[in-house]
Length: 253
Image (tube, rainbow, N blue to C red; front, top):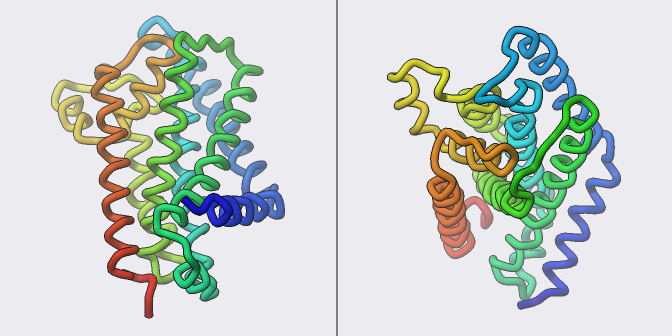
């Protein structure tokens, strides 16, 4: 593996983050903190507990997942779209760099930025509610796996999009509704039986459920199933990326 090429792409993407620090880190942290204040304060005053957990603490894993998924998609999609837009992607394609190495560089940087934001949000939440992480190793595992998986998904969106408006199309029309309907702010057990069944077709349910289990040992679905769904989606994204680089879809003129 050409580690020098991987690190060069990774370093360039990370440097872009520090140049736009307010947009990349400060803005999403403030936005998520406002979510916490509104949902934890306004709704939390009416819903005291969910499954024996104070509502303010209950929504913390969901808020972190919300930020992690949206930021992973945004970082990765913009990371690969701008080289396509400016034409510098052809330098990568003509260089002795395999698609695995290019993917690791772009996706690794996007996932790193998302994880940094999630850690900051987790630390910020600690100022509002007492937090208890029952399984810190599994918490980190779900955090990394989700960041990498949705960065891969964002990478695909950045390749597919042929304009700035399409970069926001799927995140706004698909991902955000799935996150809000995926148990981020409630337990799906609170829904009517018919809606509980429908909700199980939402992949975000498994991510939020597994991540919440690592905090409080409560989950809407089994942890093993949550882990399987994350790995399945990651594999699907990797297969699509391999096909794109092999065929040159949306990369070559």
